Picture (cartoon, each protein chain N blue to C red):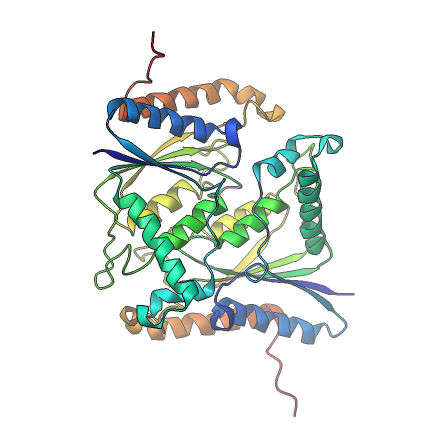
Length: 216
Length: 216
């Protein structure tokens, strides 16, 4: 049975562009997979606990020597890994905050990276591959080549790199200039922002299917 | 009176290389500034609360319309900004975890970036400049040019960029390959790791002064 893991991380609730876009993708996925099931994880509404030094140290210890906190942390890693392994498609919404990923996405990754659970301890090969992993990234400004802040987006490049160590080939669809409607100084960028959003919609629809029309 | 703001973020406690290095720098600073005072912030031991969407939205509202949570968040931003403004030297320890900054450093930045508090709302000019800001970065692996993971370090480049929007010109001293003594596969890199550590010590001593000898 097809299974989707849908992850959001925006702190902006209903005002979030990334949430609107992941919802569009998830809705199309459901229409295309009427017998499919969905796991939803909201990293903003239910943030994971920070990984502590004690818990991190479990990566260097045999299980028999674990403290209760280490047992708990490894179980959380296993749970997060199982959520990915159970899915044949993952959709992750990734807003850019202050030129980097939300702290909650960083914490999700910190728990996920665990030799012996998500990578092969002998070969370091990642164990979470074999599924579609779609990152839907949003950025308040513009970061393309030739713009003053080209190279300042540390969310998408970082996430693609770190996920690759887990065997995941993540694909990124990005929508930029999402603050053009909110920040007065960005008013002149509104047409470019609309273009970026339309392109994002087209990219999502190309991967997941056309949006579902309201039933008659 | 000279004032130092000393910030650590490693989750590794006494096993932390970055903490050892910031302590070396702070000790030398104190020796050179016997009448100086120090504020210490430990982002791992006392992590800041995640910035919520409601709190973030305070950046777009007049103060008169703030909710209690927004008042609290702005006061926290002011406190973090005041800690920097009170210091003529800031030392920040920045370990690299999974190719990015600790989530706690990201949260510190998320609170710090606030138009009207840390940037001029009219010109966007950063308001935290005019002091020495020393980042002491540590990395478990090697990320120099020509290495397979060149470009994977998203901690230092990101932090320098985002701090520049606040008017801060951060300087980075980096020590690499800190996992060479711990990860068996990195055993052959131990000489390079020792070189990197020695270079880090030299760089720190050049900025802050020679380490203080034990008193006779």
